[in-house]
Length: 251
Image (cartoon, rainbow, N blue to C red; front, side, top):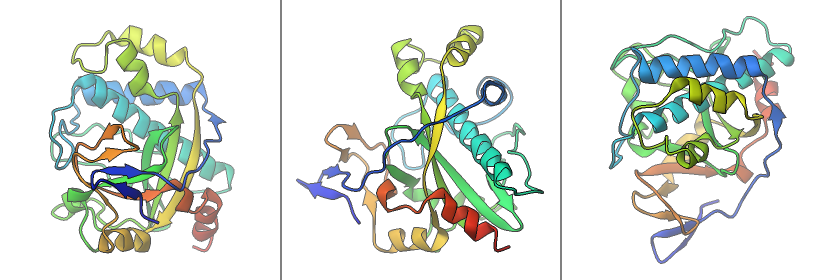
């Protein structure tokens, strides 16, 4: 189902999924904090622009994105372990230079999972349009040995919204951050997640072919301006996490 469009620039979500939080252990928070610090403030590399984006992201925003993304990978890994999956590699904690990317977020017996993360109130799985071709392949990886084909796409939502917390502390749009203060703030929160849903690569091909597109500069729900073109799926139309478990158990 496509978003409701009004006045050619206003798009509205019509198929939502309520957030059902699951507690995140403090040890996972520490691991993801250390990783994000190494990537953003150490020797790692994270794109300062979204694909097709219009503005350069500061370290505060890059940290929030990196921390949230790695958190999503770890909670997914832990849920698979709870469901009896063995031989699953832990999320990659390698810190890479410019132009070097880690492979699939998670892989089980040859099946590769792309894990997307979002704030707890989000109701769209978004893919930056310039990163994906009509075959559902990840374009930045076409010319290297990293993963370009993903079998499944999983959206993990995280609470609280770290970006909002950083904005309130005036840390979001800055490059200089007191890391001790940042760590204290993060560990002082109670964090939770849920699986908003999952889809297959066939679904991704479908939304690209049928132009499920939020254009650059359009407004989502009348207030969120899109920095770049994004393909989308509404959370209410995604399959649940148990579907992914059942599919992987076939292999």
